[in-house]
Each structure stands twice: as C-alpha cells, then as structure tokens.
Image (tube, rainbow, N blue to C red; front, side, top):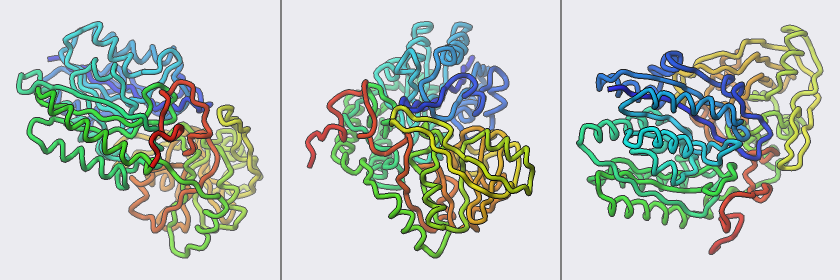
Length: 492
C-alpha cells in the first residue's frame, strides 16, 4: 500500500491586508518531500497521527508537501498552485490512500473554496481514491469538501489540542473502509450564522454544549465521527458560518438525524455566538484595579492567528497611558524596529516609532505607530520548539526578535507573525510569564493552551484591527444573505 500524507493549511481573512504568498508559508513552515515527513513525524499533529497509522498498516509513505501559513489575506494563485500541484502530482504517480491535514477556510485569489477545489482535482485524477480529511474547528464547510472525500472530521477543541486525536480517528475510519470493515456515509449541513471566533471557545457555552452533543452522537452505535464547526466569519465566502457533519457506518438516516440535532442546537444558541463589546478605557481601568496576577489581557481585534496585522498599537497605548506596571506584551510585529534594536545592541536605550506600519483599507484605518522609549533587553533568532499542548513538538520561527523594556512594559517584537498560544513566546526571550502582573496577548482563545494554567484573571480588550469581533464593521460581498447577526433573523 502507498499512502499519500500531506498538509495544506491556511485560514484566510479576506479583510486582511497581509499578502499570502509562498514566502508567507515559508515563514511558518513549508516542506516538500522527505523534509515534510521529518518536520512532522512524532508531533501531535494530524500528519503525525497519519504517519503512525500508515506505518502500522505497513504502507509506503509519500509526503509531497507540508505547508501552513499564519492567517492572512487571500492565497496568491502561484502559491496555491504550487502546493496543490505537489499533492495532485503525487496522486498522478499513484497511491492507494490519501490522508490530508487541511483547514477549511482557505480562500485563494482564484477560488473561494481552496480545500474543496483541491479535493475536486484529486477526485478527477482518481475517482476511487480513499481520502481522509481533518479540518479546523473554524472550517467553513462546503459541498465540494464533503463530496470529494471518503470521511471528514474537525477538531473538537479550541484551543486546538486534539489535532493528533482527530487525525488518528478519521484516518482509522478510512483504513477500516479499505479493509471492508466499515462503509463511511456522511451527512452535512449549515445554518446562516456568522458566529464570532471569540465566542467559540470549547470550554465555554455555547460551543461546550455542542461539543458534548457531538460526543454523545459518537457514543451511538454506528456513528464513526461527529463534528460541529464554529466557522470563520472573517472569510467572506458563501458558506461562511456554523455547520455540522456526521460520518456513520452505512446509515444515512442516522447521519441525518444526528446532523439535524446539532444544527438545531447551534441555531437555537445563535445569540450566544455574538460578542458584546465594552469601551477600551473601561476594560483597562478594570484591569488596573486587579491586585493579583498574572492577568491576561486579550488584544483580540489584532490577533495574527485570525489574520490581524499584529502591529496595531491602540490597546498597548491605552495600557501605557493608564500606567499599568509589570506588563509583558506578546507580541508586536515590526521587523524594522527589530533591526533598529539590533543596530543599537543589548543595553542601549532607544526611542522607536513602534508598530503601526500596516494600513487596513477594509476597515478604513491607517497604521498609527506609537513612540516608545526603552532599553534593548534581549535579541534572539526567534526560534524555539513548542512544548505545550497545542502544536506540540513543532518548531516556531518568529524571525529576528527583540525585547524592548520601557520600565513598566516589556514588549516582545518579532519579524514573523506568531500568535501567542504557548509560553515559549516569552520564555524563549528570557521572560517568566508566571511572575508578571499582566500578560497582554494578541490572541483570542488559543492563548488558553499555554496561559490558562497560570492566568488568575482574563479580560478582553476591544481594540482596533481586521480581526474585529464586530461583523457590522466589515463589508461583506460574498456571504449568503440573510445571515445572522448581520441580518436579525427571527431575533428573540
């Protein structure tokens, strides 16, 4: 048996000004051939699980590509084609099973359904090829994705700490189907609900209850996998929003019944999927009044893990203005500022126009740097390995990195976008986050993977950016209408 194992992942924020070309993939992780296998063997990623299953089956493994980029704007045509062709060429060369780690919210310049288009091409080459697919909890599920694979599953955790588990689950389903032990049968659907990512944490309602319902479905005889997707509202495509898919062993009626229950539950909870905002000055003042830390402060509107520029300074400026002390910021993207600090050297006192290098036309906002003075505390190459529960074993490349210490605030400044889901963003530059009073993170929910165990309090700070949790600020052109909450459908 010859097993094709590949990863092609990107969560596309169509409102983001950040270009997604091959360089963008290279900055996070782009590997071809044997390099892809070496990069992900033994990791807690779907590819790691797939390789273990294939080895247990005695299969020869081919890994044409492992590619992932931090969320950003639509994927350039040449970048998409380079990655898709690597996978399709491997199918042309011949394989007996394909095991794919995809995202589900990839929008390219020439296709709004990056994953569905890839799977459709693979099916055209080999109509009978067994294909397993793992997708992110923020997938915008489409008919093309479902009809062009054998079995499909999504993560049940946000932050995503179960990637290995779901890869192993759906990979085993497809290997069992090859052996004739099961007949995967899928039913899927969606609801017109653009839920906000900040309301999709699986430790919180309403997602907590939906995930519990998925697990209840999987406990039923004949159900092989059950998934509910929160969707990714920042990808302006027709199918954006909440959806569900059930995989059963040959029982279409059971699949439809389980799917319908999940979708009805999601729709009934639609109001709980909408984030309620609070003035930034009030939130920072509330943080200042808290005496015990660490206090996690979330600059969620500028989260690069959802396509943010990671250089909006509005929240940091307010924290400084209100005099919060003993703060660590992770992180600001500003390669030019890093170069200035490198030139000055460790120990030098510098005044920088930090951040604010990127305009955001989709929200009619120009970049606004913040002038700060501080000491260059640390300079590193920005490379470290994740040891926490999410992306365990994966090498992070933040690019040349510096720490600017203003006296009250230590700011980690990076050259490659990176969302702080692991404490390594601080420990790799000599900061002990558990001993800080405040941790200001450009994150939404993923921060919980590394920081929830040490956080005494958490506050969301409603700043500015293209990962805004206010859908009314965004000019949607392609999403189906009417859609909640832009359109108040049957509001209660």
